[in-house]
Length: 327
Ligand code: FBP
Image 1: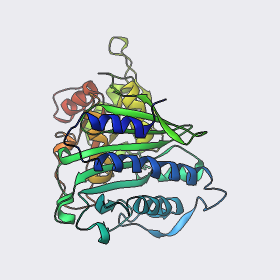
Image 2 (image 1 turned 120 degrees about the horizontal axis):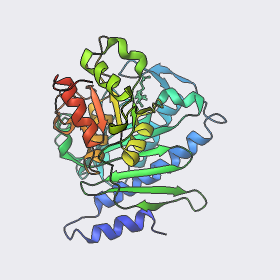
Image 3 (image 1 turned 180 degrees about the vertical axis):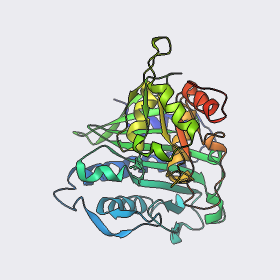
């Protein structure tokens, strides 16, 4: 039984210059994940699955559990001097940890509850997180995705899973509820070069660019030799859809559309962290024009068109968008 703490401490020994701070920080995400998992599991009995009666900086209705998970994450890093600044999809401005302001060498960024539309219907949800070296202030959070030190997600499904990378292999842990510990399930997750499923909200196809529609039509066209048609697998939760792709291959898309010219998903809280995991598992993530990890956002809540998946599907999608491929 290799617990998260044991795995992280043994990993740390491989890095003689390690201070142990990143190790403690990663362990904290495990703690926050357990607390959020519990709150989600009793949400309907306790804090409620409804609206918090407020909207976030994205103009979206905040759910009670969005706010609660956000508070749990802020609290979890408020001691020990590890983190000086935290930015969240649910907060207009970053939170500065005054008492860690001098010492805290790291900044954390997170989407507390991904797939909010699934909360009221007991669907799969996730928490997405990213760790960067702290800079002088909020402006230094606006770096490329390659500046991340670590990134990952917690998936709240039948089991609670923790997936992360520190820029090396992608690790997968499963929460063992009876002992309350995340146990190692895979120390090096690899994504197949090609998959057989796709995830996109086709209800929005009317507003897509013609090349995007052509690509999705291509996946749906029957051709045994290339394993088509692909199966539609769209759950309403990016984390759930990405986790399936991480293990089985395939592609998830949230493209630009007439009413969402920059797509929906946020660079710092969703796209950069999942792209960091994807690339270290041999998969890829693109804006359609280039790697998501090369994007340097101009603002904290910037959105981009986003596709993530197996290397072959992402390359094909980019060729369709450049008009170099057709069905
Ligand atoms: P939240 O972080 O606010 O949940 O938004 C992200 C998300 O819910 C993704 O998890 C999901 O894939 C997508 O938006 C669903 O959007 P739509 O309802 O437009 O298909």
